[in-house]
Length: 461
Image (cartoon, rainbow, N blue to C red; front, side, top):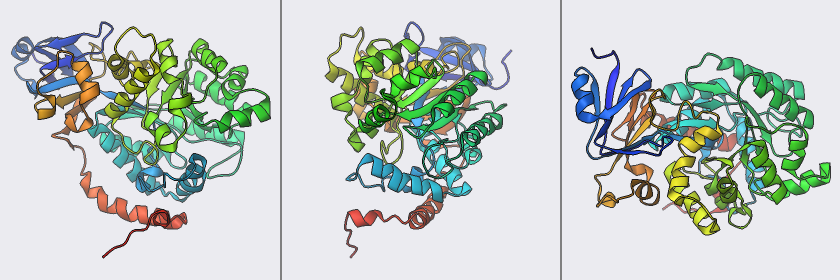
């Protein structure tokens, strides 16, 4: 007898990313509710489940849902590609992004998160680590629910310096607790302890935040060392480099995800490896902001030595795009350039980072990241019928990473539900939000006193 809510999913190729990295042909996947319950031949599964809904095509390649490990969902989304690239990264953050965050309304946060997650899921991203909501995490949670994807949210905390929602150490910890409580029973979104990071967190805040994450069986994430100036500040203040100082505090561990960690010395690299601390790399952001990833970045080496690495797209004024396949391709190129002694092709590493490797770095490898029985049914269907895919290569992983883009994605399933079909979100009218987004962009720039056009003259005839 066919189970209720049963779906059969198939394609010409299924890249499972299971422990054996199996690539299946002439196979199908049976989904019941939100779980993968069986993998077998298409003929057998359809025959034994005559009442099941069938999704697929002989032209589709099926891969696990992609994992974006570092994404700002608010603030920059409504002013995407507005911050000039000719200014320093610190100026872009503190003279542009921070004032925008300070001007955000609850409705701004909700529409920003909704649009960002909608674009993300059309690019195959089914799980997003939100890198810190300054003001209204409950509105960002609504964005997750509207689009229908999974992820984590956090309330951006800092107890050093001035800025929107900077607070006492006690105040910051209280806001973290509120987010944990907000998502306590949520089926697909979890509250993380989330600090701004950099040099804007006291030792006491770091230690309490780490303990809070451990006690509540969740993760701690913060930004650190995207540029060389951060190490200088830590050396002046503590006599140690950032990672070394934080390690002395007993903060690091498998529950910690550091955003960036571009500028590391040998000792810091070894500390991250030995402490089992994860790193989220957003290579497009470092290139756009000129932060030295090609000269000083150690992420390929970190990964080759067994480090827990994952990839992110960052903000709409740094990485700008949420094409995670393109991000993976860039990282594969960085690994090629590093000329490391590695045990598999760089394309394999790249795909792992946005699927099962990313899941492992987030502590979620038993739940997402691969197509295996018992896991959540998060999957992406890629249309390989276009001319750019012809002929199909013998190695589908190589062709996926080096030759494909998110524009090839046709459909996306999250938690067993088809939420993108024919390249369009099914749960809401994405285009219907565009006019509102335009007006909100104008109002945000005005209220923050920012004028992007002062950096480039535009003449209208």
